[in-house]
Length: 221
Image 1 (cartoon, rainbow, N blue to C red):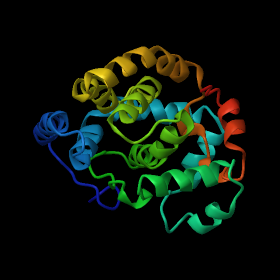
Image 2 (cartoon, rainbow, N blue to C red; image 1 turned 90 degrees about the vertical axis):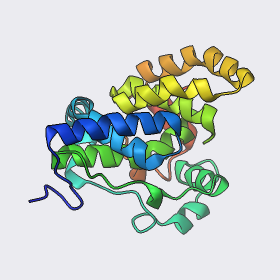
Image 3 (cartoon, one colour; image 1 turned 180 degrees about the horizontal axis):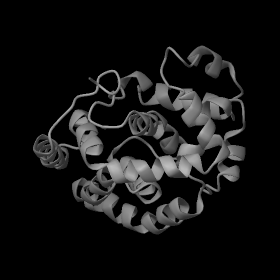
């Protein structure tokens, strides 16, 4: 019996094959989001337990785990966000999504995490990823993705994030690679100093000024 909707059971051997195969596929093509998702799920159990522990230790994190909110076009009123003042988290979020033609509905559903609670943690991680781009002021190109992945890797310990963070710079043109190297200490310090991003109830902060949210969680651009 499946542990949750969409869950796929595997043997240890099958899981190993999926983990290795998806890792190689992700390295060859970082835009294979399906392979990135499989790699994250088949290699991330230890990190997901750590993430869940961090959430349980925090009042807001516990609330998120209890309520299990989802971020999608059916759960968030994007037209409402467009009507919020321009300096709010919600308005800045929808502007970013429109600018880069992104929809939260594109996030892959979790299938290979063998624990329903940890599966939700992984799903939540995927659905709040765009907020990290927004709060860190990073675009959705390869350079911006690498910077965000370093931030997420240091905060979560997810092997998939480290894989992307280490391999991504190799695909950058030399000029952007130098820019990445110069900016890495700042990204690392931000990841270490900032509050755990999984403990932010973004949906409840849409009408807050984005700079106030950054200040509260110790992200200084």
